[in-house]
Amino acid sequence: MYDVALFKRLKALIIFRAFFVTLLLGTFLIFEIGFYRFPYPHAILYIIVSLYVLSVIYGFLLYRLKNLTAFAYGQLSVDALSEIALIFVTGGIESWFSFIMLLTVIASAITLNKRAGFITATICSILYGLMIDLQFYRLIPIGYDISVKEKDFLYNIFSHITSLYLTAYLTGYMSSRLEKTSRRLAERDSDLKDLAFFNKELIESLPSGLLTTDVSGKILIFNRAAENIAGLSRAEATGKDITEIFPFVTRPLGVQRTEGEVSGEGWSKIIGLSISATMDSSEHKTGYICIFQDITELKNLEAELKYKETLAAIGELSANMAHEIRNPLASLKGSIEMLREGALTRDQGEKLMSIAISEMDRLNKIITDFLTYSRPRSPEFFRFDLTAMLDETVELIKSATANIDAITVRKDFEGPIEIVADPQKLRQVFLNLAMNAIESMPDGGEMLLSVRRLLNSVLVSVKDSGIGIPPENLKDVFYPFFTTKDKGTGLGLSIAYRIVEEHNGSITVKSPSGQGTTFEVRIPAAPDPLLFSGGAAQTSGARNPDVASAGKG
Image 1 (spheres, rainbow, N blue to C red):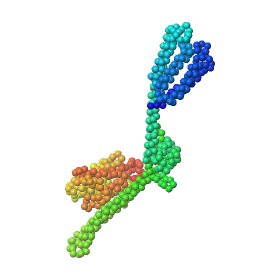
Image 2: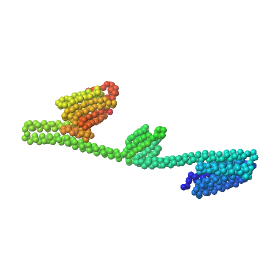
Image 3: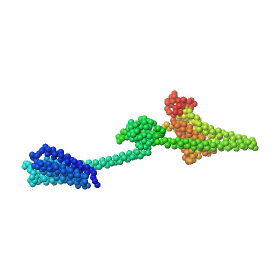
Image 4: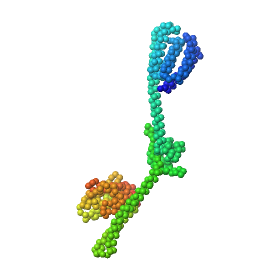
Protein backbone atom coordinates (compact mmCIF):
# COMPACT_ATOMS: atom_id res chain seq x y z
CA MET A 1 0.00 0.00 0.00
CA TYR A 2 1.40 3.40 -1.02
CA ASP A 3 2.19 5.58 2.02
CA VAL A 4 1.18 9.15 1.20
CA ALA A 5 2.41 10.52 4.53
CA LEU A 6 5.88 8.98 4.03
CA PHE A 7 5.97 10.38 0.51
CA LYS A 8 5.34 13.88 1.88
CA ARG A 9 8.02 13.50 4.57
CA LEU A 10 10.61 12.26 2.04
CA LYS A 11 9.80 15.19 -0.21
CA ALA A 12 10.30 17.56 2.72
CA LEU A 13 13.62 15.81 3.57
CA ILE A 14 14.94 16.33 0.01
CA ILE A 15 13.95 20.01 0.07
CA PHE A 16 15.46 20.52 3.53
CA ARG A 17 18.74 18.83 2.46
CA ALA A 18 19.06 21.12 -0.56
CA PHE A 19 18.24 24.17 1.57
CA PHE A 20 20.78 23.18 4.26
CA VAL A 21 23.56 22.56 1.75
CA THR A 22 22.88 25.91 0.11
CA LEU A 23 22.68 27.87 3.35
CA LEU A 24 25.47 26.34 5.43
CA LEU A 25 28.06 24.97 3.10
CA GLY A 26 27.40 27.59 0.42
CA THR A 27 28.07 30.48 2.82
CA PHE A 28 31.09 28.57 4.12
CA LEU A 29 32.60 28.54 0.62
CA ILE A 30 31.56 32.06 -0.25
CA PHE A 31 33.26 33.56 2.79
CA GLU A 32 36.12 30.97 2.71
CA ILE A 33 35.83 30.43 6.44
CA GLY A 34 38.43 27.96 7.74
CA PHE A 35 40.21 27.54 4.42
CA TYR A 36 43.55 28.33 6.05
CA ARG A 37 43.17 25.51 8.58
CA PHE A 38 41.08 22.74 6.93
CA PRO A 39 43.22 20.07 5.27
CA TYR A 40 41.04 19.70 2.13
CA PRO A 41 38.93 22.87 1.78
CA HIS A 42 38.30 22.45 -1.95
CA ALA A 43 36.88 18.95 -1.44
CA ILE A 44 33.91 20.63 0.22
CA LEU A 45 32.88 21.90 -3.22
CA TYR A 46 32.68 18.35 -4.53
CA ILE A 47 30.56 17.30 -1.55
CA ILE A 48 28.15 20.20 -2.22
CA VAL A 49 27.87 19.32 -5.90
CA SER A 50 27.38 15.64 -5.05
CA LEU A 51 24.61 16.45 -2.62
CA TYR A 52 22.87 18.67 -5.17
CA VAL A 53 23.08 15.91 -7.78
CA LEU A 54 21.79 13.36 -5.26
CA SER A 55 18.88 15.67 -4.39
CA VAL A 56 17.88 15.82 -8.06
CA ILE A 57 18.16 12.03 -8.34
CA TYR A 58 16.13 11.57 -5.17
CA GLY A 59 13.44 13.90 -6.47
CA PHE A 60 13.31 11.95 -9.73
CA LEU A 61 13.12 8.55 -8.02
CA LEU A 62 10.58 9.67 -5.43
CA TYR A 63 7.73 9.62 -7.96
CA ARG A 64 8.74 6.25 -9.41
CA LEU A 65 9.69 3.98 -6.55
CA LYS A 66 7.11 1.90 -4.71
CA ASN A 67 9.16 0.87 -1.66
CA LEU A 68 9.52 4.27 -0.04
CA THR A 69 10.82 2.86 3.26
CA ALA A 70 13.89 1.27 1.62
CA PHE A 71 14.36 4.45 -0.39
CA ALA A 72 14.32 6.49 2.85
CA TYR A 73 16.89 4.20 4.50
CA GLY A 74 19.08 4.52 1.42
CA GLN A 75 18.95 8.33 1.53
CA LEU A 76 19.73 8.47 5.23
CA SER A 77 22.67 6.06 4.85
CA VAL A 78 24.12 8.19 2.04
CA ASP A 79 23.59 11.27 4.21
CA ALA A 80 25.58 9.61 7.03
CA LEU A 81 28.42 8.79 4.64
CA SER A 82 28.36 12.34 3.26
CA GLU A 83 28.56 13.79 6.75
CA ILE A 84 31.51 11.58 7.68
CA ALA A 85 33.20 12.67 4.43
CA LEU A 86 32.54 16.34 5.30
CA ILE A 87 33.93 15.84 8.82
CA PHE A 88 36.95 14.07 7.29
CA VAL A 89 37.85 16.90 4.87
CA THR A 90 37.31 19.57 7.54
CA GLY A 91 39.64 18.14 10.16
CA GLY A 92 38.16 15.01 11.72
CA ILE A 93 38.22 15.48 15.46
CA GLU A 94 38.74 19.22 14.97
CA SER A 95 35.89 19.59 12.42
CA TRP A 96 33.18 22.15 12.94
CA PHE A 97 30.55 19.97 11.26
CA SER A 98 30.21 16.94 13.56
CA PHE A 99 26.86 18.33 14.79
CA ILE A 100 25.37 17.56 11.35
CA MET A 101 25.13 13.90 12.35
CA LEU A 102 22.54 14.90 14.95
CA LEU A 103 20.43 16.44 12.18
CA THR A 104 20.50 13.16 10.26
CA VAL A 105 19.42 11.20 13.35
CA ILE A 106 16.57 13.69 13.90
CA ALA A 107 15.57 13.43 10.23
CA SER A 108 15.57 9.60 10.47
CA ALA A 109 13.23 9.54 13.47
CA ILE A 110 10.88 12.12 11.94
CA THR A 111 10.84 10.66 8.43
CA LEU A 112 10.53 7.00 9.44
CA ASN A 113 10.27 6.12 13.12
CA LYS A 114 12.15 5.70 16.40
CA ARG A 115 13.83 2.52 15.15
CA ALA A 116 15.24 4.33 12.11
CA GLY A 117 16.64 7.01 14.44
CA PHE A 118 18.56 4.37 16.44
CA ILE A 119 19.78 2.67 13.23
CA THR A 120 21.07 5.97 11.87
CA ALA A 121 22.66 6.82 15.24
CA THR A 122 24.42 3.41 15.16
CA ILE A 123 25.70 3.94 11.59
CA CYS A 124 26.97 7.43 12.42
CA SER A 125 28.58 6.22 15.68
CA ILE A 126 30.43 3.39 13.93
CA LEU A 127 31.62 5.55 11.03
CA TYR A 128 32.60 8.49 13.24
CA GLY A 129 34.32 6.30 15.85
CA LEU A 130 36.21 4.41 13.13
CA MET A 131 37.33 7.64 11.47
CA ILE A 132 38.54 9.18 14.77
CA ASP A 133 40.42 5.97 15.67
CA LEU A 134 42.12 5.92 12.27
CA GLN A 135 42.97 9.60 12.70
CA PHE A 136 44.48 8.95 16.13
CA TYR A 137 46.69 6.16 14.81
CA ARG A 138 47.51 8.33 11.77
CA LEU A 139 46.20 5.71 9.35
CA ILE A 140 44.36 8.39 7.35
CA PRO A 141 45.94 11.59 6.05
CA ILE A 142 44.40 13.98 8.61
CA GLY A 143 46.66 15.61 11.15
CA TYR A 144 45.70 16.89 14.60
CA ASP A 145 47.21 18.99 17.35
CA ILE A 146 49.87 17.05 19.26
CA SER A 147 48.48 18.45 22.52
CA VAL A 148 45.34 16.32 22.03
CA LYS A 149 45.82 13.14 24.00
CA GLU A 150 44.39 9.65 23.70
CA LYS A 151 41.82 10.28 26.43
CA ASP A 152 40.64 13.37 24.50
CA PHE A 153 39.95 11.14 21.48
CA LEU A 154 38.13 8.61 23.62
CA TYR A 155 35.98 11.26 25.31
CA ASN A 156 35.22 12.85 21.96
CA ILE A 157 33.99 9.49 20.62
CA PHE A 158 32.01 8.84 23.83
CA SER A 159 30.35 12.27 23.86
CA HIS A 160 29.37 12.01 20.16
CA ILE A 161 27.97 8.50 20.49
CA THR A 162 26.03 9.50 23.65
CA SER A 163 24.65 12.60 21.91
CA LEU A 164 23.61 10.59 18.86
CA TYR A 165 21.68 7.98 20.89
CA LEU A 166 20.12 10.53 23.18
CA THR A 167 19.01 12.50 20.15
CA ALA A 168 17.64 9.32 18.58
CA TYR A 169 15.71 8.48 21.76
CA LEU A 170 14.28 11.96 22.36
CA THR A 171 13.43 12.59 18.72
CA GLY A 172 11.96 9.10 18.36
CA TYR A 173 9.87 9.57 21.47
CA MET A 174 8.60 12.95 20.33
CA SER A 175 8.05 11.66 16.80
CA SER A 176 6.08 8.62 17.98
CA ARG A 177 3.97 10.82 20.27
CA LEU A 178 3.42 13.26 17.46
CA GLU A 179 2.48 10.43 15.12
CA LYS A 180 -0.01 9.00 17.62
CA THR A 181 -1.44 12.44 18.23
CA SER A 182 -1.70 13.08 14.51
CA ARG A 183 -3.38 9.72 14.02
CA ARG A 184 -5.88 10.46 16.80
CA LEU A 185 -6.51 13.92 15.41
CA ALA A 186 -7.04 12.45 11.96
CA GLU A 187 -9.49 9.92 13.39
CA ARG A 188 -11.23 12.63 15.38
CA ASP A 189 -11.36 14.86 12.32
CA SER A 190 -12.84 12.00 10.32
CA ASP A 191 -15.39 11.34 13.06
CA LEU A 192 -16.28 15.01 13.23
CA LYS A 193 -16.70 15.18 9.49
CA ASP A 194 -18.90 12.08 9.55
CA LEU A 195 -20.88 13.52 12.46
CA ALA A 196 -21.26 16.88 10.74
CA PHE A 197 -22.39 15.15 7.56
CA PHE A 198 -24.82 12.98 9.55
CA ASN A 199 -26.20 16.00 11.42
CA LYS A 200 -26.63 17.92 8.21
CA GLU A 201 -28.37 15.02 6.51
CA LEU A 202 -30.49 14.41 9.60
CA ILE A 203 -31.55 18.05 9.82
CA GLU A 204 -32.28 18.24 6.11
CA SER A 205 -34.19 14.94 6.17
CA LEU A 206 -36.52 15.90 9.03
CA PRO A 207 -40.17 16.07 7.91
CA SER A 208 -40.72 18.88 10.44
CA GLY A 209 -39.45 22.39 10.00
CA LEU A 210 -36.38 23.16 12.11
CA LEU A 211 -34.62 26.44 12.71
CA THR A 212 -32.08 27.69 15.20
CA THR A 213 -31.47 31.24 16.35
CA ASP A 214 -28.92 33.15 18.35
CA VAL A 215 -29.79 34.62 21.75
CA SER A 216 -31.41 37.67 20.13
CA GLY A 217 -33.67 35.54 17.91
CA LYS A 218 -31.84 35.91 14.59
CA ILE A 219 -32.20 32.77 12.45
CA LEU A 220 -29.01 30.76 11.86
CA ILE A 221 -30.19 27.38 10.48
CA PHE A 222 -33.27 26.83 8.32
CA ASN A 223 -33.81 23.31 6.96
CA ARG A 224 -35.49 22.12 3.77
CA ALA A 225 -38.82 21.31 5.43
CA ALA A 226 -38.84 24.78 7.01
CA GLU A 227 -38.52 26.31 3.54
CA ASN A 228 -41.54 24.35 2.30
CA ILE A 229 -43.69 25.10 5.36
CA ALA A 230 -42.85 28.80 5.75
CA GLY A 231 -42.71 29.54 2.02
CA LEU A 232 -39.26 31.13 2.33
CA SER A 233 -35.89 30.09 0.99
CA ARG A 234 -32.99 29.50 3.35
CA ALA A 235 -31.24 32.60 2.05
CA GLU A 236 -34.32 34.75 2.69
CA ALA A 237 -34.86 33.40 6.21
CA THR A 238 -31.26 33.43 7.47
CA GLY A 239 -30.55 36.55 9.50
CA LYS A 240 -34.21 37.46 10.00
CA ASP A 241 -35.79 37.64 13.43
CA ILE A 242 -38.02 34.65 14.19
CA THR A 243 -40.98 36.96 14.85
CA GLU A 244 -40.74 38.26 11.28
CA ILE A 245 -41.59 34.76 10.03
CA PHE A 246 -43.88 33.72 12.90
CA PRO A 247 -45.55 36.90 14.25
CA PHE A 248 -47.49 34.92 16.86
CA VAL A 249 -44.27 33.96 18.74
CA THR A 250 -44.19 35.91 21.98
CA ARG A 251 -41.31 37.94 23.39
CA PRO A 252 -39.13 37.43 25.32
CA LEU A 253 -38.14 34.16 23.72
CA GLY A 254 -38.17 31.13 25.95
CA VAL A 255 -39.57 27.65 26.24
CA GLN A 256 -43.03 27.84 24.69
CA ARG A 257 -45.55 25.89 22.65
CA THR A 258 -47.90 27.89 20.53
CA GLU A 259 -49.98 27.92 17.37
CA GLY A 260 -50.66 30.66 14.88
CA GLU A 261 -51.33 31.50 11.29
CA VAL A 262 -48.89 32.52 8.59
CA SER A 263 -49.91 33.58 5.12
CA GLY A 264 -48.54 34.59 1.80
CA GLU A 265 -49.82 35.38 -1.66
CA GLY A 266 -52.87 33.19 -2.09
CA TRP A 267 -52.15 30.80 0.79
CA SER A 268 -52.61 30.53 4.52
CA LYS A 269 -51.36 27.93 6.99
CA ILE A 270 -51.80 27.15 10.67
CA ILE A 271 -48.43 26.45 12.26
CA GLY A 272 -47.81 24.61 15.50
CA LEU A 273 -44.35 25.17 16.97
CA SER A 274 -42.31 24.56 20.07
CA ILE A 275 -39.26 26.55 21.16
CA SER A 276 -36.56 25.52 23.61
CA ALA A 277 -33.22 27.01 24.60
CA THR A 278 -29.84 25.59 23.52
CA MET A 279 -26.99 25.49 26.04
CA ASP A 280 -23.23 25.09 25.80
CA SER A 281 -21.13 22.83 28.02
CA SER A 282 -21.09 25.53 30.72
CA GLU A 283 -24.91 25.70 30.78
CA HIS A 284 -24.86 29.16 29.22
CA LYS A 285 -27.66 29.93 26.80
CA THR A 286 -26.39 30.05 23.21
CA GLY A 287 -29.68 30.49 21.39
CA TYR A 288 -32.95 28.74 20.65
CA ILE A 289 -34.14 25.80 18.58
CA CYS A 290 -37.61 25.78 17.08
CA ILE A 291 -39.44 22.77 15.61
CA PHE A 292 -42.68 23.45 13.75
CA GLN A 293 -45.25 21.72 11.53
CA ASP A 294 -48.03 22.69 9.19
CA ILE A 295 -51.12 21.62 11.16
CA THR A 296 -53.71 23.17 8.83
CA GLU A 297 -55.04 19.83 7.67
CA LEU A 298 -55.03 18.49 11.23
CA LYS A 299 -57.03 21.49 12.44
CA ASN A 300 -59.51 21.02 9.59
CA LEU A 301 -59.88 17.35 10.50
CA GLU A 302 -60.36 18.26 14.17
CA ALA A 303 -63.07 20.78 13.28
CA GLU A 304 -64.77 18.23 11.04
CA LEU A 305 -64.55 15.58 13.75
CA LYS A 306 -66.01 17.96 16.35
CA TYR A 307 -68.81 18.82 13.95
CA LYS A 308 -69.58 15.14 13.40
CA GLU A 309 -69.40 14.46 17.14
CA THR A 310 -71.84 17.32 17.71
CA LEU A 311 -74.21 15.91 15.11
CA ALA A 312 -73.92 12.45 16.66
CA ALA A 313 -74.56 13.86 20.14
CA ILE A 314 -77.60 15.78 18.87
CA GLY A 315 -78.87 12.62 17.19
CA GLU A 316 -78.38 10.53 20.32
CA LEU A 317 -79.97 13.23 22.48
CA SER A 318 -82.93 13.49 20.13
CA ALA A 319 -83.39 9.71 20.11
CA ASN A 320 -83.29 9.56 23.91
CA MET A 321 -85.65 12.53 24.16
CA ALA A 322 -88.08 10.89 21.73
CA HIS A 323 -87.90 7.64 23.67
CA GLU A 324 -88.61 9.40 26.98
CA ILE A 325 -91.56 11.33 25.51
CA ARG A 326 -93.05 8.36 23.63
CA ASN A 327 -93.81 6.32 26.74
CA PRO A 328 -96.04 8.90 28.50
CA LEU A 329 -97.63 9.80 25.15
CA ALA A 330 -98.55 6.15 24.63
CA SER A 331 -100.17 6.04 28.06
CA LEU A 332 -102.01 9.28 27.36
CA LYS A 333 -103.24 8.02 23.98
CA GLY A 334 -104.49 4.74 25.48
CA SER A 335 -106.29 6.51 28.29
CA ILE A 336 -107.96 9.06 26.00
CA GLU A 337 -109.07 6.38 23.51
CA MET A 338 -110.71 4.37 26.31
CA LEU A 339 -112.40 7.51 27.64
CA ARG A 340 -113.68 8.37 24.13
CA GLU A 341 -115.44 5.02 23.85
CA GLY A 342 -117.58 6.00 26.87
CA ALA A 343 -118.12 2.41 27.99
CA LEU A 344 -116.27 2.86 31.30
CA THR A 345 -117.63 3.18 34.79
CA ARG A 346 -117.07 6.36 36.75
CA ASP A 347 -114.33 4.80 38.83
CA GLN A 348 -112.56 3.49 35.73
CA GLY A 349 -112.83 6.90 34.10
CA GLU A 350 -111.36 8.66 37.12
CA LYS A 351 -108.55 6.15 37.24
CA LEU A 352 -107.75 6.76 33.57
CA MET A 353 -107.89 10.52 34.12
CA SER A 354 -105.41 10.16 37.00
CA ILE A 355 -103.09 8.17 34.74
CA ALA A 356 -103.36 10.84 32.03
CA ILE A 357 -102.62 13.66 34.48
CA SER A 358 -99.68 11.69 35.92
CA GLU A 359 -98.24 11.12 32.46
CA MET A 360 -98.68 14.80 31.59
CA ASP A 361 -96.82 15.71 34.77
CA ARG A 362 -94.11 13.29 33.75
CA LEU A 363 -93.92 14.91 30.30
CA ASN A 364 -93.70 18.32 31.92
CA LYS A 365 -90.85 17.14 34.17
CA ILE A 366 -88.94 15.71 31.20
CA ILE A 367 -89.29 18.97 29.28
CA THR A 368 -88.39 21.04 32.36
CA ASP A 369 -85.30 18.95 33.10
CA PHE A 370 -84.27 19.03 29.46
CA LEU A 371 -84.57 22.83 29.34
CA THR A 372 -82.62 23.06 32.58
CA TYR A 373 -79.86 20.95 31.03
CA SER A 374 -79.84 22.57 27.57
CA ARG A 375 -80.41 26.19 28.66
CA PRO A 376 -79.01 26.48 32.17
CA ARG A 377 -79.46 29.64 34.19
CA SER A 378 -76.20 31.52 34.70
CA PRO A 379 -74.95 30.96 38.25
CA GLU A 380 -75.18 33.82 40.74
CA PHE A 381 -72.21 33.71 43.08
CA PHE A 382 -72.44 34.52 46.80
CA ARG A 383 -70.20 33.99 49.76
CA PHE A 384 -71.98 31.62 52.13
CA ASP A 385 -71.47 28.84 54.67
CA LEU A 386 -71.62 25.54 52.82
CA THR A 387 -72.24 23.48 55.97
CA ALA A 388 -75.29 25.58 56.84
CA MET A 389 -76.73 25.00 53.40
CA LEU A 390 -76.02 21.25 53.67
CA ASP A 391 -77.71 21.18 57.10
CA GLU A 392 -80.85 22.51 55.46
CA THR A 393 -80.48 19.92 52.70
CA VAL A 394 -80.20 17.10 55.24
CA GLU A 395 -83.40 18.28 56.94
CA LEU A 396 -85.21 18.26 53.60
CA ILE A 397 -83.95 14.73 52.91
CA LYS A 398 -85.05 13.55 56.37
CA SER A 399 -88.49 15.01 55.77
CA ALA A 400 -88.70 13.26 52.40
CA THR A 401 -87.69 9.91 53.92
CA ALA A 402 -89.77 10.16 57.07
CA ASN A 403 -92.21 7.53 55.80
CA ILE A 404 -89.48 5.18 54.56
CA ASP A 405 -88.47 2.54 57.05
CA ALA A 406 -84.87 1.47 57.71
CA ILE A 407 -83.28 4.57 56.04
CA THR A 408 -80.70 6.39 58.17
CA VAL A 409 -79.30 9.77 57.17
CA ARG A 410 -76.05 10.86 58.86
CA LYS A 411 -73.85 13.88 58.45
CA ASP A 412 -70.16 14.52 59.16
CA PHE A 413 -69.21 18.21 58.86
CA GLU A 414 -66.03 20.07 59.82
CA GLY A 415 -67.54 23.21 61.24
CA PRO A 416 -68.31 26.34 59.18
CA ILE A 417 -66.78 26.25 55.67
CA GLU A 418 -67.30 29.28 53.46
CA ILE A 419 -67.26 29.13 49.67
CA VAL A 420 -68.17 31.48 46.82
CA ALA A 421 -70.82 29.76 44.69
CA ASP A 422 -74.48 29.69 43.67
CA PRO A 423 -76.23 28.17 46.73
CA GLN A 424 -79.45 27.31 44.89
CA LYS A 425 -77.66 25.40 42.17
CA LEU A 426 -75.44 23.54 44.62
CA ARG A 427 -78.49 22.68 46.73
CA GLN A 428 -79.98 21.14 43.59
CA VAL A 429 -76.79 19.07 43.06
CA PHE A 430 -76.69 17.66 46.60
CA LEU A 431 -80.43 17.03 46.75
CA ASN A 432 -80.19 15.10 43.51
CA LEU A 433 -77.24 13.03 44.74
CA ALA A 434 -78.91 12.38 48.09
CA MET A 435 -82.23 11.26 46.54
CA ASN A 436 -80.34 8.98 44.13
CA ALA A 437 -78.56 7.46 47.14
CA ILE A 438 -81.87 6.83 48.97
CA GLU A 439 -83.49 5.32 45.86
CA SER A 440 -80.53 2.91 45.55
CA MET A 441 -81.43 1.43 48.97
CA PRO A 442 -84.92 -0.10 48.46
CA ASP A 443 -84.40 -2.44 51.41
CA GLY A 444 -83.05 0.25 53.71
CA GLY A 445 -79.54 1.36 54.59
CA GLU A 446 -77.46 4.36 55.56
CA MET A 447 -76.56 7.52 53.68
CA LEU A 448 -73.62 9.62 54.87
CA LEU A 449 -73.14 13.25 53.81
CA SER A 450 -69.66 14.55 54.75
CA VAL A 451 -67.68 17.75 54.14
CA ARG A 452 -63.91 18.23 54.36
CA ARG A 453 -61.76 21.35 53.87
CA LEU A 454 -58.74 20.59 51.66
CA LEU A 455 -55.82 22.87 50.74
CA ASN A 456 -57.52 24.87 47.98
CA SER A 457 -60.88 23.18 47.74
CA VAL A 458 -63.81 21.69 49.61
CA LEU A 459 -64.74 18.01 49.28
CA VAL A 460 -68.40 17.00 49.69
CA SER A 461 -69.05 13.26 49.76
CA VAL A 462 -72.42 11.49 49.43
CA LYS A 463 -72.08 7.80 50.33
CA ASP A 464 -74.76 5.12 50.48
CA SER A 465 -74.86 1.44 51.34
CA GLY A 466 -77.14 0.55 48.47
CA ILE A 467 -76.97 -1.87 45.56
CA GLY A 468 -74.25 0.09 43.79
CA ILE A 469 -73.72 0.77 40.09
CA PRO A 470 -72.60 -2.02 37.72
CA PRO A 471 -69.02 -1.43 36.47
CA GLU A 472 -70.18 -1.30 32.84
CA ASN A 473 -72.49 1.65 33.66
CA LEU A 474 -70.02 3.80 35.63
CA LYS A 475 -68.70 5.56 32.55
CA ASP A 476 -72.21 6.54 31.39
CA VAL A 477 -73.83 7.85 34.58
CA PHE A 478 -73.30 11.52 33.67
CA TYR A 479 -74.59 11.16 30.07
CA PRO A 480 -77.97 12.81 29.31
CA PHE A 481 -80.98 10.43 29.50
CA PHE A 482 -78.91 7.56 30.86
CA THR A 483 -80.92 5.89 33.62
CA THR A 484 -81.67 2.44 35.02
CA LYS A 485 -84.85 3.58 36.80
CA ASP A 486 -88.31 2.88 35.43
CA LYS A 487 -89.53 6.45 35.98
CA GLY A 488 -86.24 8.40 35.82
CA THR A 489 -85.49 10.99 33.11
CA GLY A 490 -81.71 10.38 33.15
CA LEU A 491 -80.98 14.12 33.36
CA GLY A 492 -80.42 14.57 37.11
CA LEU A 493 -76.74 13.58 37.16
CA SER A 494 -76.11 15.36 33.83
CA ILE A 495 -77.47 18.59 35.33
CA ALA A 496 -75.39 18.06 38.48
CA TYR A 497 -72.27 17.52 36.39
CA ARG A 498 -72.90 20.76 34.46
CA ILE A 499 -73.49 22.78 37.61
CA VAL A 500 -70.26 21.53 39.20
CA GLU A 501 -68.38 22.41 36.00
CA GLU A 502 -69.84 25.93 36.12
CA HIS A 503 -68.21 26.26 39.56
CA ASN A 504 -64.81 25.10 38.21
CA GLY A 505 -65.13 21.96 40.28
CA SER A 506 -65.24 18.24 39.61
CA ILE A 507 -67.54 15.33 40.37
CA THR A 508 -66.53 11.68 40.50
CA VAL A 509 -68.23 8.41 41.32
CA LYS A 510 -66.92 5.23 42.97
CA SER A 511 -68.91 2.05 43.33
CA PRO A 512 -66.90 -0.95 44.53
CA SER A 513 -68.77 -4.20 44.05
CA GLY A 514 -71.20 -4.82 46.93
CA GLN A 515 -70.07 -1.71 48.90
CA GLY A 516 -72.52 0.94 47.79
CA THR A 517 -71.80 4.12 45.85
CA THR A 518 -69.87 7.29 46.69
CA PHE A 519 -70.18 10.58 44.80
CA GLU A 520 -67.44 13.13 45.53
CA VAL A 521 -67.83 16.81 44.61
CA ARG A 522 -64.87 19.19 44.78
CA ILE A 523 -65.57 22.93 44.85
CA PRO A 524 -62.87 25.64 44.97
CA ALA A 525 -62.54 27.09 48.47
CA ALA A 526 -63.40 30.72 49.08
CA PRO A 527 -60.55 33.26 48.98
CA ASP A 528 -59.61 35.37 51.97
CA PRO A 529 -62.57 37.47 53.19
CA LEU A 530 -60.49 40.67 53.00
CA LEU A 531 -60.47 40.32 49.23
CA PHE A 532 -64.19 41.05 49.16
CA SER A 533 -65.88 44.40 49.28
CA GLY A 534 -66.42 45.60 52.81
CA GLY A 535 -64.01 43.00 54.23
CA ALA A 536 -66.84 40.84 55.64
CA ALA A 537 -68.43 37.61 54.42
CA GLN A 538 -71.98 37.75 53.03
CA THR A 539 -74.61 35.11 53.63
CA SER A 540 -76.68 33.52 50.90
CA GLY A 541 -79.52 35.86 51.81
CA ALA A 542 -77.73 39.01 50.57
CA ARG A 543 -76.08 39.45 47.25
CA ASN A 544 -72.52 40.91 47.14
CA PRO A 545 -71.96 42.29 43.61
CA ASP A 546 -68.19 42.28 43.95
CA VAL A 547 -68.20 38.66 44.97
CA ALA A 548 -70.57 37.73 42.20
CA SER A 549 -68.44 39.33 39.52
CA ALA A 550 -65.30 37.82 40.97
CA GLY A 551 -66.87 34.37 40.96
CA LYS A 552 -68.03 34.69 37.39
CA GLY A 553 -64.64 35.79 36.27
